[in-house]
Length: 209
Image (cartoon, one colour):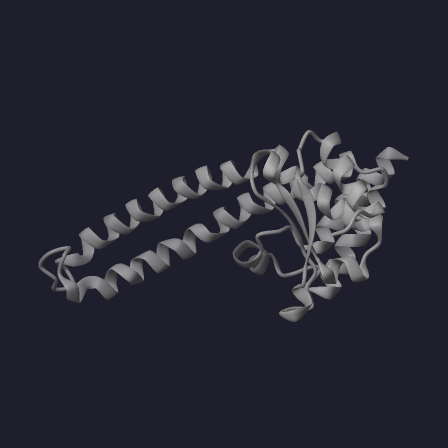
């Protein structure tokens, strides 16, 4: 992006939050989707801000700043490393439980050894079942981190309603269900539903007033 008010606003916010940003880029998401998105890519001083043109077209400067503050929250709260660590633990648990089920049922189902190629579909079935059982735990942790990033954005932007307004637009643009069934949330949502995100944005705004 050329030098602009938005670029300066985002770079200033990054510096204020202790995150060095090298440059700001516009990416043409509209070629592939109507969804709006933003991201921070890279490490250290080489980080870049990536803004979808769908975001730039439909959102105010303050709303884009709030979305960017959410992404900064992921960086400042070390969410990438936490996700890697948590994911490794979940993978180990998944493999361990799969191994237990596989070994205990192998002979009963007529297979001789764990390396019997004809038993491979059974191994995949157990992996699928165990992964499905662990999915709510993974999604729950992801929703927890996303809420932390939202709270970081609320704490580092001047008006809490900017994030609420941006989230509402994102939900409509991305066709999100604001209040999904609880089971659907547990198994399908890596972010808090938009209804819950708006609720704590409004509570935060009431406290600040």
